[in-house]
Length: 384
Image (tube, rainbow, N blue to C red):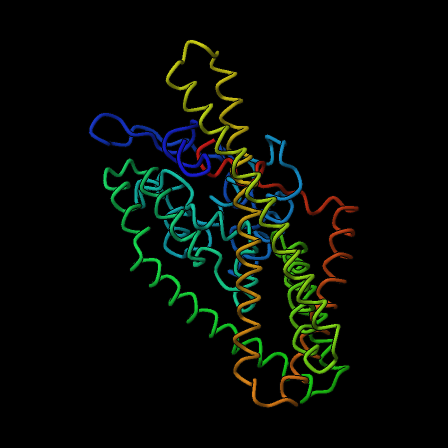
């Protein structure tokens, strides 16, 4: 079944290996539909037009709201496939000249890039200056290496897994993550310092504009709300050093939230692992299930696995955002006035993010423009 049900053999999309590992066929999620048609743009579209169309389409079919919609699965994969080609000048030129087959022949593209689908689930590039690349999270980084090895049928996948679990490798990942968070902490501090330079009103307007833009990204409303929650809690915690009990209660609330979120992800992971085992057992006893039943079981497992990735990814990103705040505050720890100023700005930004994220989520739900779901949308991108 592979890691959380990804890779290692289920499903029927993508390129399939024949004897000796040669690819025999390519199944495209887009079918006969052209890439420009999928994104709803003209052939003359600019790079900016392509990105805007991709954000709009990806937000509509994002993996967060319609986990049981088979159309969403196929649609999300097609969007990813189209954007992967049209956002790359070389691939786009080949596609314009020779169509899809030309792209596949030139690039040997049997499947949509797994990393790209994960990034699309977590806002694309919109959150690069907020929490960075989700694929750089140590746990997801390891998972992706393992998945890619399984999907390629790499015989050294098990050895790679052992190497990644070694103490030395884990320590290196921790060091890399700390450096990554320090860079993001610097960017956050620069944004918060604008409150003192430009004034509270101008700062609030800038935060509002940023939050609204982020909400337009795939999965944006939920991610904005999550980031806002962490900012508000961390701001209260650091301001609470000087305000007494409020900071203490913020710490307690933070610990309870992390514990309950972790328990939820763990429960889903156990359910998915059990489902993966069921699929694996049925694959060994093909006669027990009809082809349609087998297919349904594999799709159910894939949707469940993507739901775990979505929840796990949010939990890990929440931890990263928290660490970014801690690094930023520790850099000015000896300057009480600086700590107070940053904590106040962080609280304000966090509360605004939470409020705007919730309002935009409600608005998008009413307009039907934020249809998404881990099991639905991105599921097709893994060969379903």
